[in-house]
Amino acid sequence: DAGVTQSPTHLIKTRGQQVTLRCSPKSGHDTVSWYQQALGQGPQFIFQYYEEEERQRGNFPDRFSGHQFPNYSSELNVNALLLGDSALYLCASSLGLLPGTLFFGSGTQLSVL
Amino acid sequence: SQQGEEDPQALSIQEGENATMNCSYKTSINNLQWYRQNSGRGLVHLILIRSNEREKHSGRLRVTLDTSKKSSSLLITASRAADTASYFCATDAGGGYQKVTFGTGTKLQVIP
Image 1 (tube, rainbow over the protein chains, first blue to last red):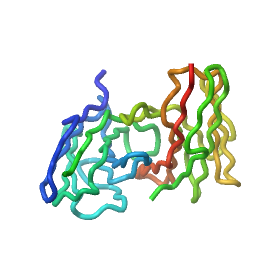
Image 2 (image 1 turned 120 degrees about the horizontal axis):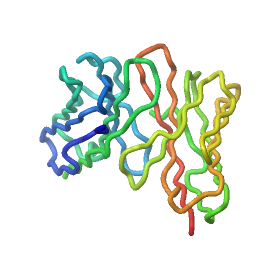
Image 3 (image 1 turned 180 degrees about the horizontal axis):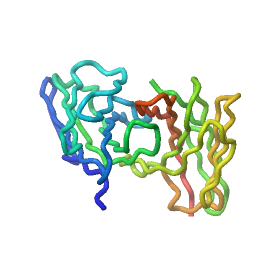
Image 4 (image 1 turned 45 degrees about the vertical axis):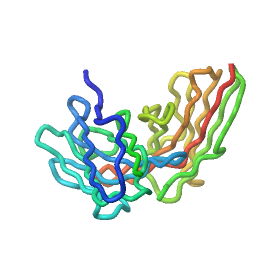
């Protein structure tokens, strides 16, 4: 049973560039949430996707956008990268919209130079 | 913004001792969960306690919840070196649309 997979593992970009991060949820899960975790901090909620629609959004600018595909996989896009976007980006999957356990991937470490 | 705040921020104990971490949160919740994170990678779910529960056990873990004080504690008994990790509490306000908000974390070091 495959868990949550994220790609790539590491990424280095320069300011102003755009980046796309990918996530495949755990088998049987249909909901994907994205989190940003700065060094030494707790994960911050970016947004959540269910049935290919953004259902909830945290306090992040429009430069952060996402997409969910019919197979439940998801992408996180960040435009016009800033130095402050350097962080570990975590994808979490779950089943349905009722609150419960989140299953996390290993994350993508993004460095913006 | 962080909903929860863990205390202490860092904790160092000897193997075999018990470790207690506390979490305080700001708004009413539906569920409170604890997660563990090793070396800044993915988080692993440990335990979930509902707002109408006061205590829950899972193996060497004991979680308490006091909704009147908006606080929770995680006790790890007979700690092992493998318990070295960061621990986060996470809350959701219910009402559908699962937005789980994490605290600032406690970094636990268990010395062999």
